Length: 443
Image (cartoon, rainbow, N blue to C red; front, side):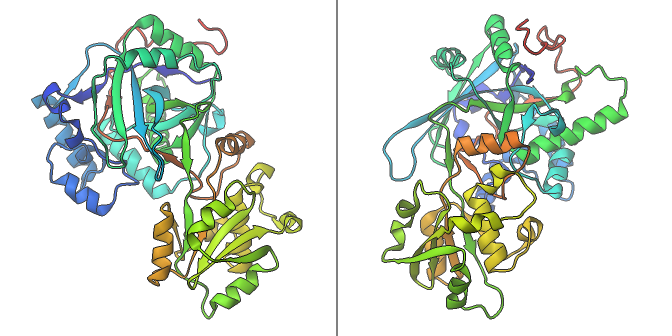
């Protein structure tokens, strides 16, 4: 199962770490253009390594990395460790403070076919190539992907809580309103226990599919170039943030669908008529009630079009018409139902591939933004959805299939620049990098 290893992390020096908020950055695939421009103005912000720019962006990142390392902007910890990473956050409209507990380490970059790291969504080749090139040039990992293991006994949390009594640093509040805290565990016996627990687990990739596939692509290229490799070289490993799927503080937020356009000549009334064979369509007085009206109900959606709100509920007897070539677990998902019966049946966008390429749909997390954009005539209609549950994610992953695009939004996102790791050939020269644990032995 999953082999993990401690790392000698690279971090901003002590003086800069005291103001870590100035140097962290959002992940490459969620940072807005406005955020990017503001961050680029700080010459020491981590975005220069994670989302470099220029004609030779990866080359620019390599030059900057060498400068930061030689000048002491970034320093490497003397001892290898597992890095505890907590994120404290609140959800909109709630005063309850959550704490997502996890840890960062290296995990072997397993191919999907090995069924150790499991995915739940497909990737875009261009984005994977971009990440692979950056990794190949710099051999430096600037942000951890997010993986999930399941441990109903919560054994590792007590070690993480102990480490958090002496944090290395913390943000005041990151770009998404979370407070991020970092600590380190360097006790060899405790690190071994982390390895023993994870060696019996599969890992579900929650977030960071493109970065993970970038590591896979780089590893495959190195293996082809070095067929005599031992399997212990540092480029076999990938930086991951691991959290317990059994925890109550693991939150998945919904991602709504905004229909930017309807097929030519299709009126609002025509669209509603096309939905009628598949859904019960009930008008509602207040669009802002839609999330509450559909909460917890299978195959239920909110629709906002032409200033009018509707509750949609799939007619159960039509579900058997869903004939996509996928598993029963995927067919049961709300979003699969939405994409098949609304995008394919009602709008004529046939099949998942065509829907992924169709420019007429946008994915929006903010409910109010959906309504506002329809009112401003920036979109024709908004489709409001429930969040995917962790149980659904696990069932789909274990079925070997993937979800519709933008099905999950694990919140909050990890941040870039909090911890860096290297996969240079000289990095893993420490006692922990011995032959990996045999599954199930605990040795």
